[in-house]
Amino acid sequence: MRILCIEDDIQLKDMYERALYTISLHDDDIIMCETGENALNILREKYVDIIITDLMLPDMSGIDILKIAKNINDKIEVIVLTGYGSIETAVEAIRNGARDYLTKPVHLEIFVEKVNNLRDLVNRYDEIEEYRFAKEMIEGNAKDTVMQLEINLNKCLLKTKKIIKILANNKKDNEKLLEIEKILKTKKNVNI
Image 1: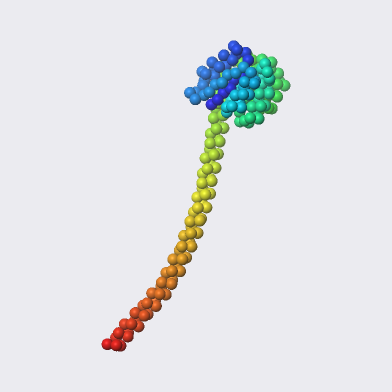
Image 2 (image 1 turned 90 degrees about the vertical axis):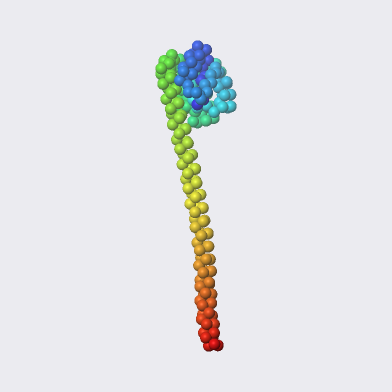
């Protein structure tokens, strides 16, 4: 799972990074950056599952990052962090697709819990996508198999009809041969 954390405050960035590495799994990729522009470059180059962004960055807002990230990949889950919390910005963040909105100072236990909840959510979404893909493959293969069976059945029916026709002709031929044989036997008896 790839997690991108955007925080311009060095102390908070280090704290979030330590917290993320503490809960990360062996295959997690934690990316830290300090500006919106760096974050956007990463988003253009790499697939990201979760974004944690500060609302007020030096070069753009976390809402702008949220909008652009959702444009790039609408499945990205986003947590917006802010020291300037208001109901209006919280509503705006949620309306634009943020999964959560936390005010600073963020308690690390809550931070970790929110990230773990998003990790579980992303994993569930991935499992559902894998299930859908497998289901489509199975259904597609089943349709192909049924079509192939119908084709093979039709071929078998045609061959069977041909065989029946040949056998019917052979039966008539056999009956003729038996008749000829009877006549020949009769003629032999007569000639002797």
